[in-house]
Image (cartoon, rainbow, N blue to C red; front, side, top):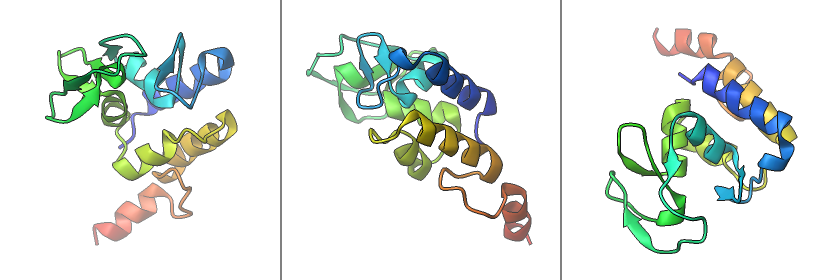
Length: 137
């Protein structure tokens, strides 16, 4: 189930502070993409400067650029997108869609609304409650 509070907080911040949003980069100066802000609001902190191209092995065993790695509140090292998806409570498919560098703020808002109403970024016309009812029959 999606983390409603974190979805709302992230999209509200992006809409209210458009100069702090850059969907092309996990972070660039003080700007961040949707995943960068979601991770930040969930307590993730980048472990190095944004231009650090050295690698680090994350807690899940994956090698990442240090610049795209965050330390979580419990001390894990994770890629910012992995941390954001986990904290948002979304699957890989929805994370890939939501974190795409091509998304505008308008598209992000629509995806957040779709996640909240239908349980997926693509706006499946079957509301989550109906899907769950059918899936559990």
